[in-house]
Amino acid sequence: MANRTIVTDFFRLSHPHLATRHSVNNGTPKFEVTMLFPKVGALPPEVSVNAPASANSLINALNEVCMEEWGCSFADAPANRGISNPAKVKDGDLDPTLRPKDDNGNRTATPRPEVVGQMVVSARNIDEVGLADAHGSTAITADKFYSGCYCRAQLQISAYNCTAGDVISITLQNLQKCYDGASLGGRAPVQSADQAFGAIADTNIAVGADQSLTPVAPPQPQAPQVETPPVLEPHENMPDYLNPPPVQTAAPTPPPAPVEKSYDVNGQIHTESALRGVGYTDAHFATMTPVA
Image (cartoon, rainbow, N blue to C red; front, side, top):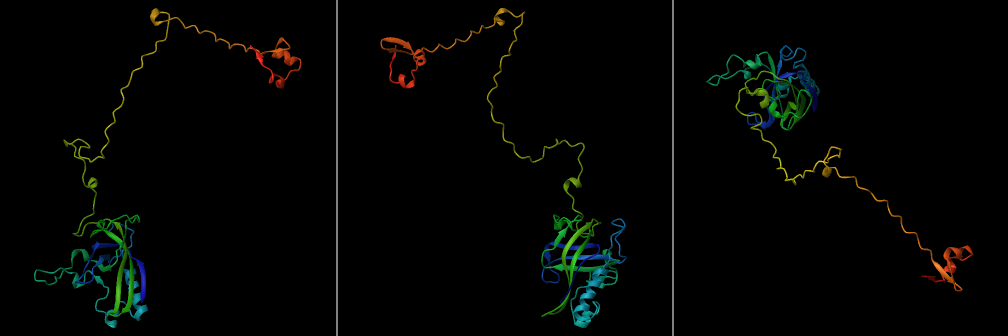
C-alpha cells in the first residue's frame, strides 16, 4: 500500500456534504466535497492575488503512489490494473460527465459554468472530517462551508490492493475555509442576524422591549428608616431651654483606706504593723485572732 498525505493549494468548494454523510450511486454514505482548481493556478484577484491554486500537488501525489505500488503513472493505472472506478481528476472543459442534461436526459455540449476553466476532483471519507476556519480555529461548524467559498484540504492519497481489486483513493481528512466567495447556487455565506439587518430608525418599539432578560428577584422589604434628630450646637443666642448650663462632673470619691488589724498581746492591743516592727511574721499572725 502506498500513501501520501498532502495539503492542497486553494480551491473553490462545490457540493459540500460535511454535516451528514452522502451516498453516490447508492454506494456507502460518506462525507464529501468537490474541489475546483483553476487551470491558471491562481484564485480570482478579488479573492486573493497571492494564494496558489493549482491541482499539481494532488496530481503529483497520485502519480507517486501509483508508481510506487504498481510501477505506472496515475493516468495509466486504470487501464493497466483494470481499475473500474478510480479516483478521478476531471477537466471541467472537456469531461462530458460535468455537462448538464437536457430534458431528454442527454448531456449538453456546454459544461456547467462553475467548472469552466477548472480541474475537478472529489474527496470523501466515511469518518467525520476535521474543520477549521481561516484563523485555524476548529470552532467552525459545517454549515459555514458552502458552494462558492474557497478552501484548502488535507488529503490522503492511496494506491493499494484489496480483495475487491486495485484501488486509487483520495480521502478527505481535514478542511479549512479560507475565503468567502460568490455562491454557486447553494447557500450563501451565513451571517448572524445583527450582520444581516441594520437598526430601523423610525421604529415604534422601545429599545430592549423585545429582549428576553433574566428575571430579577423582587427587592426584599426593609425596616423603616428612623430619622435621627439633628444635634444642635449650643451658642450664646439660643434660648435657655435649648442652651442648658453645662453639667458639673463630681470628682471621684477615693476608695476608703484599709483598716489595719489589731491584736491582743498579754492584755495590750497592738497594731499589726507595730508587731511586725518587733519581729512578728505571718506564721505568728496565723495563730492569733485579730480584735474587733
